[in-house]
Length: 404
Image 1 (cartoon, helix red, strand yellow):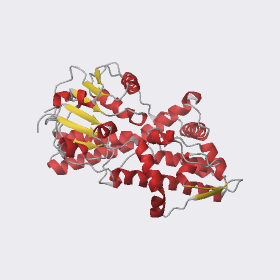
Image 2: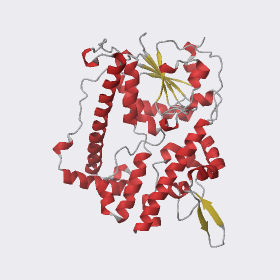
Image 3: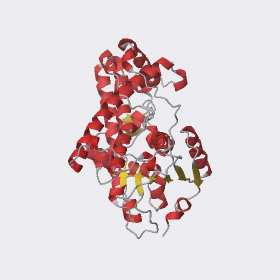
Image 4: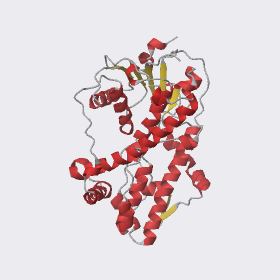
């Protein structure tokens, strides 16, 4: 196996560059066109509203939960244009007021929230599956030193660029495997607080909203664990990566953590950086729970901005999430060790491969679509602390060196 020293990151703009209609606005069209068939397939009924003039309106749970149930209407284009980010934008106060706090109202709320999630997932997966990629001879040769991290669900790389399937990792799943597909925001990876459920009433309603926010989160750190397994199986070490190409990726908010992780892993380590992770065992459990509940009420219940929430509440949530993630990471590590033992029939703990220390940061090559896109990406690169990058106005220009 040759050494892999180049990572190529594929975003939705890559498929659009290849001539496929895979934007979120195309998903909106698909959803509106196929909504009735999806409801029929899932055995979910529409909600019927009659206004003062006797005008009848039929809507699904998607419009109720992500819109305004007191003024039921179709979701605006803005929701669909930023679809994944929009999934964390639920007006908990309005939803709670609409369904009420009695037992029947809470049951209806939970049912409606879950139905909204089922409808969107079915629609999204069905839409992705209908994108058919035609095979063609590639005009590019990336070489055996490249690995591909594909944020799309399609097999464009294999069919259009002749990439080996083994060299490609679909970080959010593939169209051919519905269960593998991941989409959503990245703002609520922590588990919902069980105490909210036990407290009942409006607090239970808040729990149901926290629950759906958790299940519509991408859980980026879990996905990065799986990505690390993919790289390790290919014998790829962070200090060996010299170049990173980003093709057609907007670096939107739900995916920033991926780029932060890759940048940190492929630059010269900062000796001054220290691990400031708190030990949750050093804090009083009762006070920690109180702070987390206050955060849930303020952040999810009242939709307060981050800067308006007390720092102790935010830190308590972060500490709890770190504990949850640490437990999951341990499970990933055990699973990976078992996989490698079976595949290689060796104890990998006794076969550690060392490589030379990094002498310079990896070089990033990034394509952008518009001037606004360029400005945004430059801001993101500054935010994650990456200075060693160059921008290209087209994907063709970005990957010119690989052209046959």
